[in-house]
Structure formats: structure tokens, C-alpha cells
Image 1 (cartoon, helix red, strand yellow):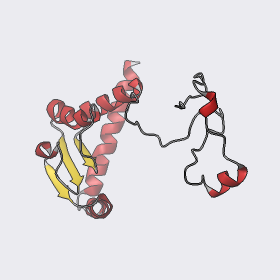
Image 2: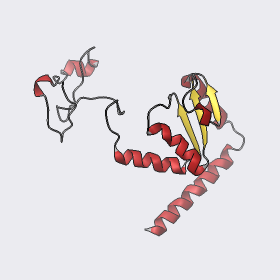
Image 3: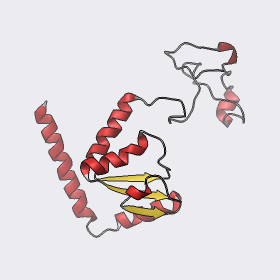
Image 4: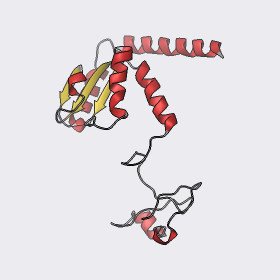
Amino acid sequence: TSSSAGPNQKRRNAAKTPKPLTEEEIADGPPSGRVPICPSCKIGILKPDGVYFGESLDKRILKRAIMQSLNSKVVMMVGTRGEVDPAAKLPIIAKRENDAKIIEVNIGSTRLSKHADIVLRGAAGEILPKLWKLVMEHPRRAEFQKQRERSVKLVKKVVWKKK
């Protein structure tokens, strides 16, 4: 099988590495069945920035996600079944360590539904715009925004003094 080698990785199976897209294919988008190749390294396969089955998570990104969970007041789970760890554990960490509220937006019940403080059933494409509108129209929105800005300034000040 071919590998998706990056610029610093060795090609394991050059014979099966897909050919780069032609100029026409680049302009029109790859035809069905053709895998786009990285225009920089000419080796790696272009794919969405996600983690697929069998791939490991970037340790820096995972560490950052855990730190954000530890500091979160609210975690929104949108359109996920919550079945893949460690990502599925992040809302639980936030709730356990920081008493964060969990909001679940999904068309059906999930493994994490029992932990959610608010459950909004339906398609994310329908629910999120309605939720955004409610937030933007909240009578105390300006007050909350000022509180958040003061909090951010305070955190920056404290972090700056530590250095």
C-alpha cells in the first residue's frame, strides 16, 4: 500500500504513490478516484486536517486541548457521538476539574449525553444559528463581554509578570 509521507518522511512505496494532479485538475478539482498530492513536497497526500483511524494525535495539540478543557467554563459537543478517546474525555475532564457546563447538540443520544447539562436535539446546521441569535440578542451580552475583556486583560497581566 502507499503511504502518506510528508516532506521529512521516506517514501515507502514509490511505485504506488499517486501522480501529482495536472494543472487542469488543480483548476477544476481532482476527478473522482484521484488523490491530490501535496504541491510542495510532491510526495504527501492532501487530506483534511483531521485524525483518521490508526493515526496518532499530535502530542502538542492534545496537551493544548487538555489545558483548554481544564480552563473551560462551557464545552459544546456538536455533532459527535463521543466514542473516540481521548477527545471524548475532554468534556468530562472540564466538568470534573472546573465544574464546566456541557452542551450537547446532536440529532440523537450519544455516549456523553448523560453528562450534558443542556441537550439540544436536532441538526447542528439548524440549531447553531438559532443559538447564535439568542446569544447575540441576550440583554446582558454587553455586560458579559466587558467582564470577559477585563478577565483576559488580568490574565495577560499576571502571565506577563510571571516571565
